[in-house]
Image (cartoon, rainbow, N blue to C red; front, side):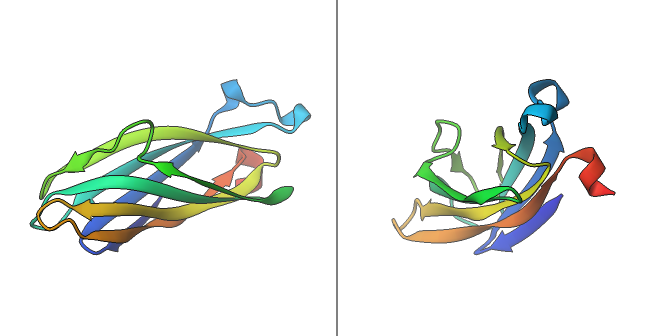
Length: 128
């Protein structure tokens, strides 16, 4: 589990290994992650874009960018939250992810960046 607060936005990442979707013998390790985003500020915000940097111990880093998350650009009210989950696959049993969200303040149209904290993606044997 990893947490960060940037510009009044709290982000918590909770990864887990998905054995039923993985095939370690074939070099396929799938990880699920749950993200909780809380608006600790006093104005509503909208999540506009995401940028992930995915590092895998057996592959070059990947950058994934695009609009919103899981097909949505959610608005988060003051003291409100948004939760989503997604997956990532690696060639190895050890890697990590980190990144950023671009948010829009709905009251003045200003955009700002929110850090997504680094979190490890570890096959159970790699965690020991």
